[in-house]
Length: 81
Image (cartoon, rainbow, N blue to C red; front, side, top):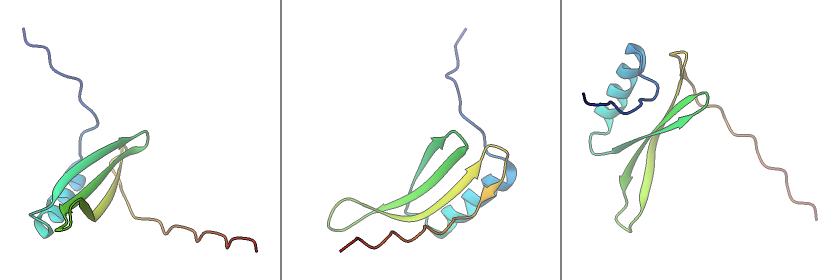
C-alpha cells in the first residue's frame, strides 16, 4: 500500500477564498507558503526585469482558521550621536 507524505495545516474555506481572491488579482505571481508555529504566511512574488523576485502581496493565516491582518512595524530608534 502506498504511504502518504505528512501534510501541514489545511486551509479553511474562508482562507481558501482569500487565496483565490489574491491569486485572481495577481495571476502571473508565484505562490509560496511559509509554515510557522502559529500558522503560515502566503507570499506572492513576481520576477523583476533586473533579476531576482519582488514581493507583491503577503497574507497571514493562523492555524485556528483566522486570517490575520498585517501589523505595522515599529520605527527603529535613531542612532546615538
